[in-house]
Amino acid sequence: MNILICSSEAVPFAKTGGLADVAGALPKALSALGHDVRLALPKYGMVYDRKISGTKVLDGLQIPAGAKARRVTVQSSNKGGDFLTYLIVNDPLFRRNELYGHPDDDERFVVYQRAVLEMLRKIDWKPDVIHCNDWQTGLMPVYLRTKYAADERLGQIPVLYTVHNLAYQGVFEPTLLNLAELPQDLLAMDKLEFWGKVNCMKGGLIYADVLSTVSPTYSREIQTPEFGAGLDGVLRDRKDVLFGVLNGIDFEEWNPATDKYIPVHFDATCPEKKRENKAHLQDKMRLPRKSAPIFGLVSRLAAQKGLDILMEAMPRMLGKDLQVVVLGSGDDEYHQALRKAQAKFPEKVYAEVGVFDEALARLIYAGSDFFLMPSHYEPCGLGQMNSMRYGTIPVVRSTGGLADTVQEFDPITGRGNGFVFSDYTAAALLSAVERALATYADPSAQARLIANAMAADFTWARSAREYVALYEKAISLRR
Image (cartoon, rainbow, N blue to C red; front, top):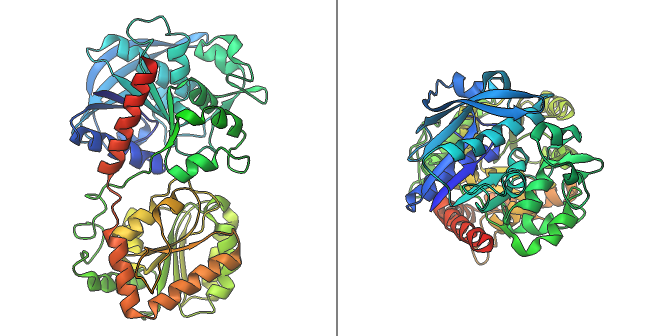
C-alpha cells in the first residue's frame, strides 16, 4: 500500500507535543510491515536549527493564498528513518521559532495543505490513502471532495482523519474560505461553519472517509457534550466510521537498557539498578538521598493535565513520607504554586518549571518510583507508557488512553500495572497515592508491580496493524 501521512509536526524534524511522536514513529512501523510510506510537513525554523537538509524534489510551485500566491519548494529527506519525508518550504511562512500561534496560521496551513496536493499532481508516486492529523490538515479532505473532486489523479483518494486532541480545532474567520479558494457554501452548519466561523477540524470530521482518535475510550468520550468541545453532534453522526487506535511508543527510543540520557542502564532482568538512577535524580533535584518513594511528573502544567487537583492534594501528600519532582511549563499560576511548595518543603519537592529538558525528563522516568497523570481528559497519553517502560508505576485518572493502558494493581492476585482513580477530585487522587504507598511498603508486591509494568506491550507494531485495517476500510468505502 502507498500511504501518505500529513502532519504539522513529526520527530526528528519538529516537535511541540505527542502528535510529533506519533507522526515520527507510525511511518517506521508501517514501513516495517512492507508499505511504501511517505510523510509531509512544513520546513520550520526548528528543522533548520537541527541542521536537517533536504534534496530538491520540486521548485517554483505557485500556491494560491487569497489575492496572492506563495512560491513553494518541496524537498525530500530520509532523516526520519526508512521512509521518505517531504518538506514543504516557504521561509516567510514556516521558518519561525514557534510552530503555531501566529496571526497568519490560517494562511500558513492552507498553503501547506494545498502544496501537498499540488505536489501529488506532479510527482511520480500516488498514495492509495492519505492519513491526515489534527486541524492543520483538516482542510485536505475538504479540498479532495470539492475543489479537486473532478481531478482524475486526486479526486477519489481515500482519507483517514485522526483527532489527537479535540480541544484544538483551528477556528478562523470566514475569510479563510477566500484564502483557501474554497466554495462559500461551505459556511453552513452541516459543513464547516462553527458559531459564525470556519472550523478546520470540523471539515476533516465531515469530509474524510474514516475517522479515528488515539484511544478507544477517547473515541467514546468525545461523542459526549462534556468532552466533545462543541463537535460531539458531528462525531455522533459519524460514529459508524469513528474508531479508536491506541498510540504506541518507540521501544528502541524508549529503552532503559540503552537510553543515552540516563546514567545507569537497566532492564526487566535487573530492575534493582533503577535505584541507582533514583539516587542520581535526587542529587540532580537537590533532594536528600533516602528510600522514600519519588512521585514524578513530566507534563504541560495546565488544568487539563490535572494540576488543579494535584495542587489541592499537595499539602496532604507532602505530609507523608515521599518526594515529588516536576518538570514542565504551562500556566503561570502552577509555576508559582510549585515554586511555593518547593520553598516550603525543600527536602520533599523540586520543580523545574518553565523549561523542558529531555535529559532530565528521561531521568525522571528512570529514577522515579511513581508517575503522576491526574488528567481531566487525556486523548491517549504517552507518559504512562514511557514510565512503565522504565519500571515507574503510573498513578492516573481513568480517562481516555489512561483508562485503556493502566489497570489497578491487585496485591492479592498480583495483576495490574498501576493505580487508577475515577472521580476528578483531590480526595480521589490522594486515595490512589495512598494505595501506591501501601504497595511500595511491601517489597514483594512492588517488585511484582514493576515486572507487570515493564512487561506491557505498547509497541507501534500493534497500532500500525490497526491503522492498516482503517486504511483498507477507507479504500473500501471510497470504492
